[in-house]
Image 1 (spheres, helix red, strand yellow):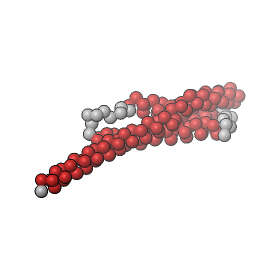
Image 2: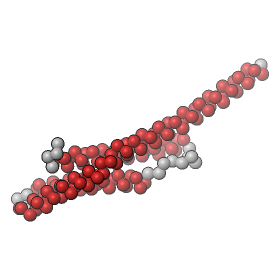
Image 3: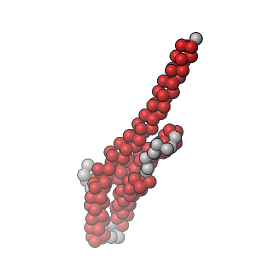
Image 4: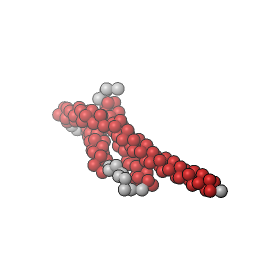
Length: 142
């Protein structure tokens, strides 16, 4: 009888330990996903700035040639410049507010925070890719 209780006790300990390890791994996995989404587009930040300069130059050229005849195109180009700026700034806004959860927060709090951060960084990722695509199309680079 004593062996039965001892066996049940050990099974419960191992089960609980296994559950805790699984929870820690979920939060770690989520953190890895968040950072991977960030890391995918971080190297593109320089390209964002370069393309913005090219779009701005195109805007200036249209302004100098005939600003009234090109008013609609100039507005489109300025909107594209703003889209590129917003995408660039969005990355840094996200990076400034992101704080990896430390050991003192519960597993559920860490997962909730990281899930929200994943949503935010996915938007940053999407905004950067869309801005780059739009600029490349406008500049005939695609």
